[in-house]
Image (tube, rainbow, N blue to C red; front, side):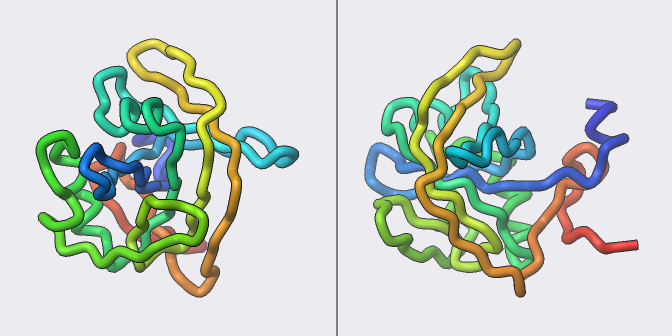
Length: 161
């Protein structure tokens, strides 16, 4: 964890997955990386017991999003509970929107959304790496994305300089 403090800020994502009841689960995760340009691929790691990871492996579908600054408080709250027991969208009054070509919704205030299909899962220590091919990118460069600061102790936009 000390390394995360020394490398702050870290890009922050909300991993959007489909719950058993059809609603959307949101999990804030910083363990995300671009893996390939051709084909476009992204990877993210979740704890082995993670409800989000389990749902992605069961459905094979995910949307990796970069939330905007209006969601800072909601993102912190989403990280404090499990989607297996909590409807994080309702609990945090997050406005959601549909994405063409997917039955998973995303927060309306999103800078980037990567609609993806799981290709492979690999155990890496106490996490599972989810390797996904990106089927579609949606972005809005006019919006400011959130970053995790101080080892995930705070979320806020990054500032140049």
